[in-house]
Length: 140
Picture 1 (tube, rainbow, N blue to C red):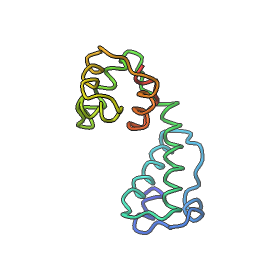
Picture 2 (picture 1 turned 90 degrees about the vertical axis):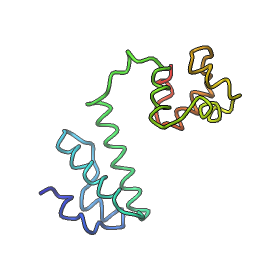
Picture 3 (picture 1 turned 180 degrees about the horizontal axis):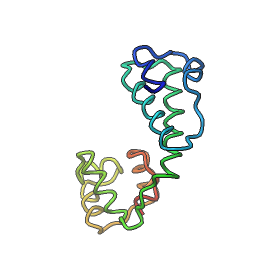
């Protein structure tokens, strides 16, 4: 049984106490990755996190992102920016009109972007990156 399972019912509310339970540190292998994700899952199951729990979960999330970016990166070089945009829109049940609203452009511009008739501006890239929590370069 892993360390986090023993504390499933009642995780501490203070950041310092959570750190004592499972100190956040650079993830070295897939076992540590699984344990860290397990702790994140336990925190996510809590209906209302304390400030300390939220900060701790964000810290662990950053460690997972760093490890996965280095060890489990997905090669997206063969995927076009437009294909990435279409996939994210579909995954979020968004239409060309929703895209236009998000970008702050005329409604017809959303469909022109999706048809490849119009290019994304730097401002569009920033808005898309913020909305979908990805790097702007994904859409290039």
